[in-house]
Picture (cartoon, one colour):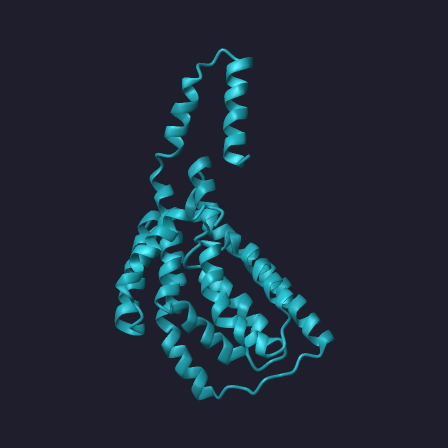
Length: 262
């Protein structure tokens, strides 16, 4: 049985059988819980995650990291960790993050001899690792339920994500050294600089989102809207990858995503 029905039936049974509290209270509490404006940020950030995949912003970030770190032993695994951290700072939706990163990295990782199971395991681990990276949908939901400041939750969520990323980096280093993975040719600094310029509009977005919420410039709901407008503008003017025909499927994917656990 879905967990939501388990919670609902357990609560209803407790109120009906062991207390004199009117069961209409359940309906009132459900309505109150769903009426928080902050929860509107959840589908908006999911839609933003779909947009960064559609506009190739995620691909630009991955390409820059690949040029910067791809030459070292196990370099693309480090790129996967860093890219997931950056993309999670935009969308907050793990399904959108993985859908944006995996197609850009997995083919090249496979060409370099990476095992399918290792790639999927690392992707899943980084998805769990970035669960607290702002704008985390879990943190937004916790803030709406408990009344804790979203800005405080976002500030507190950064450090666990960094620590876990470092730990995963150590695991990647140890496994790459043990397996004797081959090193790839180093990209020229010119190529690194060019990829940085291309990725700069995309790299700026996660920092803008975090700064706007933490500094109190905008709420999580407002900053998600700002992020969507920014992604559309950058996709149209910079990356030229915005396809109007994909808007409807993107909206369907957003509505179907089981947030905040997507």
